Amino acid sequence: MSRVRIFNETDELYRAAAERIAHLSQLAVAVPEGDPPRVTLTLPAFNACAEVLFLTAGAAKAPALAAVLEGPPDLVPPAGRVRPEQGEVLWLVDRAAAALLQQRSHSNE
Image 1 (cartoon, rainbow, N blue to C red):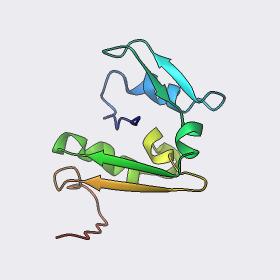
Image 2 (image 1 turned 90 degrees about the vertical axis):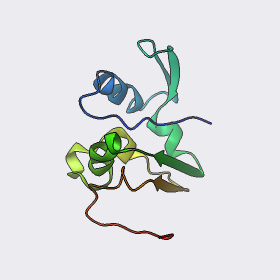
Image 3 (image 1 turned 60 degrees about the vertical axis):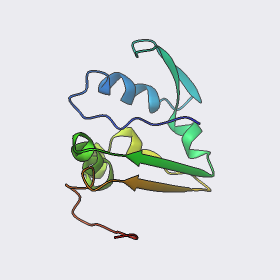
């Protein structure tokens, strides 16, 4: 299992991570400044998946989640560009993370 971290724009690793995950010629790239240093999958790898699941929790993630799901198309963070070619994306979010979303769909309220 791998993960796509949903960064807040103020996160110090946001810019470096956004550049790396959007790398289009590799399936995985190193993130040496991470703690611990790690390897992350890129958009081509995630977009080749049959299913991608995002699990987002907490009020601290609300601005980033709103930017991913409802932000301007030209400013979509990397997680918002995960669109599997022959698969699907499923978002599991708690109420705190979803607090800033304008359009809500609740299947289990």
